[in-house]
Structures are given as structure tokens and as C-alpha cells.
Image (cartoon, rainbow, N blue to C red; front, side):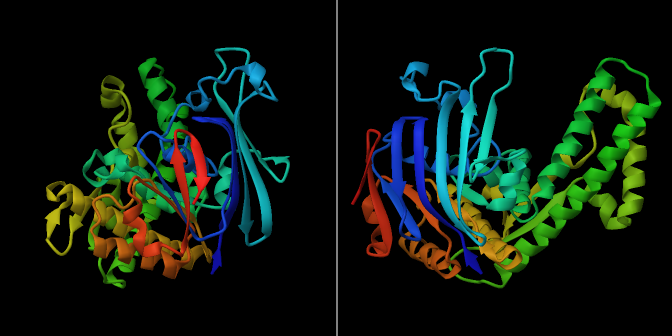
Length: 384
């Protein structure tokens, strides 16, 4: 198993940093300091080494340093810049990403990405290079929040193993949006509707099958690694899931497609699509206590989330024969001393490069001498 490593990180006009260069020499990297000092901003920058809008899902223009004018930037066409060197199975490579500024307000924000000086055709190419996983304080109650957040976590797990999953999800959602638009406009084009619904059925069944497979892998991983973290029983619930239980994939596609046709009048009034994997819900049960996740305490929900992430890391290592980068923003909050130690031991066994933040240095006492520490104070980062 190959251990991917982030060797350095450079930020320009990103969040609170006008310019920052950090060198990473250890497997565990820890940033400590008071709230609001800029610790999370560093982890957020690392999260942009994957597709999307980062761990905060921020508007790209909001990431530009507030007192940064175009006259201060070497390249006025770029808002913020992130650059990093990584050790990958293929060798050391350089990845850079930046916000491309436009002179026209109506143009959408655009993120440009380069690898070893060459432009990548799309963000999805990043998922083929490496995976970045994260856990933030906003996710502490993710397992009991709305179903969309649980679906996103599951899809993130799948995409880190199979980059094509993101493409299937995009194609499904695009076809669904187009169908909704035609319905809203009152269009009556049976051939076009049939084409879109066929695409929704094809991609929707494939998405659901991938999600079901991931649930089986997660459950198996947790059951085979009994330790300090609890196990979760996971069930994906929805009409499409029921179809796949009773029919083959091809039969389920045909039934799904026919149901979408029948639902056109209803969906024309309600908007959207009233059937599909975009409505599926992930049910989580705390196995040891035999209670659903909404009835668990915040601390219990946090340790179950950690348990799921560790299970996925084990699956990732087996399937891709390499480790992702892991970002834990205030990741030790709600974990007692025993579970903190257990977490570090699991990550050490998996050889995952992990970046953590915290306000209390004492919480990281068990990894003193094994980790690289940085003090963050008001946008200044100093190695201890």
C-alpha cells in the first residue's frame, strides 16, 4: 500500500493569508491556536486539491483575501492561488489551483487547475490523482441531519474509490434538471422526455447499486475491526432501492423509466422528480445500543462518524492500494482520552497523512514527538 504525502503547501491571497509557505515532514500535522486564527483556512486550502468548493463549500470569490486588490497580485487575472507538491505512486508532482477572475459579472466563477504545469481538462481529473477526506465541526450531527447530507457523505466515499461515480451523479442530476425545466415550461415533447427519463433510469440504478455496495463494505469493515469505536448498521431506503431488491438492474431500469413517465403530471405541479436516488435516505443505527442515530447524543454521533471514516479509510487502502489525505478540523472534540488514543493508533496503522486542528495542545499529548506542530496566531504560522 502506497502512502500519499503532501510535501508542501503554498497559499497566495487565500482567506487570511497574503502569502504562506509550509513544509510538511511528518505523517501527522497539527495546527493549534485560538479560534479565528486561521487554522481551518489551511485545511480548507488542502481540500481544494480535490474537486468542488472545499470543506466549507464556499463561494470561490469569498476566498480572496479581503484586503487584496488586483494591484497587489502578480497576476491580476487570478484571485487566490493554492500550490502543493505531493508524493504519489507515479513520483513527485506539483498541483496548482486558482480562481480565474472575469471582467464580466455575468460569467460564472471558474477554478483553473494545473498539474506539473499542464492544464487539467476538468476538476474530475483530480479524483484520479488523489483523494482528500475531511471531518469538520459542522459534520458532528451530519448523521442525524437531513438525508441530503448523509447521501453526500456516502457519495464522497464512493467517488474517492471510483471517480466515475461523480460523473454518473452529474449526468443523473443534469437529466433531472432538464426534465424539470421542460415540465415547468409546459413543454410536450414525448421523445425528449423519454430520452431524459431513460438517462435518469440508467444513471439512477447505477448510482443506487454503487451506494448499496459501499454500505456492505462499510458494515463489513466495521464488523471486522472491533475496538474502541462503535459499529453502525446502515440501510439505504427509497423506491429505487426497493426496485433493486425485487428485480434485476435491467428490469429496475425499465420500471423506473415507466414510473417517471407516469409521474409527469404530478411532477409538473410539484416540481422536480418525485422518485429517484436523489430522495434516498441513509438510516444509521448504533449497533451496540440498538438505537437510531437521531436518538444518540452529540458525542455518540461524533464517534459513529469517526467509525465510518475509519472504515472507509480501510476500504480505500484495500481497493486503491494507496491512502488518501485526511483533514480533521477540531477532530478530537467529543472524543475521550481512550478514543483519541485509539484514533491515532488506527491512523498510524493505516499510515494515513493526517492534518488536525485544535485549540488545546494538551489534547495531542499522545503524539508528541511523532507529529509536526504549528502554532497559528492571527494569520501567522510558526513551526514549534
